[in-house]
Each structure stands twice: as structure tokens, then as C-alpha cells.
Amino acid sequence: MDNIYQCTKCNKKYKKKGFLDKHYKLCCITENDNIKKNEELPEDYSNNEEFIKITNEYKNKMVNLTSYHQKWNTFHLSINDKIEILKNKYIFTFALERILDNDENLNVKIDDENNRCFVYLSKLLVIVKLDSFIDFTMVKLYKHICTFCEELIENVDNEILINALDRTIVKFNMYKLNIDDKVKDDVKKYIIEIYNNKYIQSHHIINNVVLSHGLVKKNENKEETI
Image (spheres, rainbow, N blue to C red):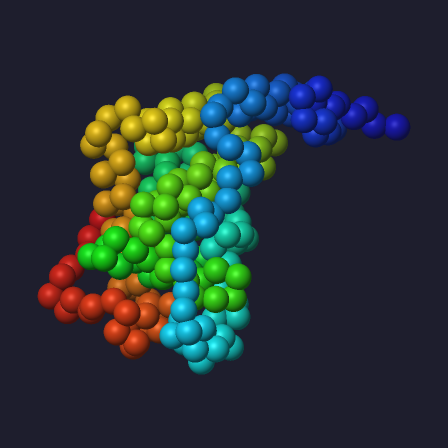
């Protein structure tokens, strides 16, 4: 019978002690971070009869989208893709770019002029305050990066995993604690640019719905770049 090695902190099991040792270091780091484990989308979103009508009109075309309160679909990312994310200097923005390569995750249209965004949430199109959306996106990115670290325990050196997780926690805490006044503004700018750039590259359903109903002004002269 094969030996089973179990983490004493979270009870995850591994077939090799070396894998448990890697996991244990990750587990100790994440155990001490200040991220709420069950943080959910803030309840400051709203909808009305107009949005319900729009949702009903396009519901068959939006059925394949991932609801924003759920985890992103990352099945399109290979092991090598995830390793490249962990190695990237700009780990949060690069992770978001790669995650949004999957059209199922393009479930938000940002209206930065009015400090809001239109979000596909639980089969409805709703409005969420832009700052709340940015905060929630950072939490989702943090959790996904931690998950990638855990998934890659058997595939990469421990140094890469710990370095990636250390950078992730430091960057997230800088954002969350607003240590530098410029950090939150930069994060907001980059997330908006990434989403806008993705929609320029594709004629996606959320983008088309929002623009066709005049919910966001279309600026033909503005070039979005990252």
C-alpha cells in the first residue's frame, strides 16, 4: 500500500513527501495572509426592468458566460501557461490577460466615465460600482494565483512557487492596505485597459449588448493600449 502524506494544517494528501513539503510552505504562507477566505461580491449592485428586459432578449447568447461571482474558467490554460504566469514580473495583470483569453470569462463591460460596470451575474445583467468591481477582481486574481501555485506543486521548483506567492501577497497587500496612494490608481487603470483591449480584439456578446443599447458611449477615436 502506497504511503500517504497529509498536511496537518488543511488535511490535503500527497503521495510523495517532497510534494507535501512544498505544499506545507505554501500552506503556512497563505494561512498567515489577511485575505478573507469567503469574500463575496459586494452587495452594491443594482438592476431594473430595463436590464431584466435586455437580459431576457439576449439570454440565449449569454448562456455560456461564467457568472462573475463564480471562479473564472481556466481550463484553457496549460501547465506551461500557468508557470509563465507565476514567473511573470507583472503577475496580476498578466494573469488577468491570460484568464480573459477565454471568452467565457468576458462577463463585464466597464463604463469608466460613469464609475460603474455592467456585470453578468447569476443570469442577469447588473450594474456594479467600478471600485467594488476592481476590489473583487483583485481578490479573485489572488485566489487563482494561489490555486495555480497549489496545482503546480508536482511540476515546478519550490523556489518558483514561494517566490510567486510572496510577490502575490506583497502586491495584494500594497493594494488592499493602500500603502502607496498611486497603487490603487494604477491597478484600476491597468484592469480597465485590459478589459477594454480584450473587447477591441473581439466582438463579444456583453460588449455588443451594452453598446447596442447605448448603456456606454462608443468612442471611435480612442485607442486602448496596455
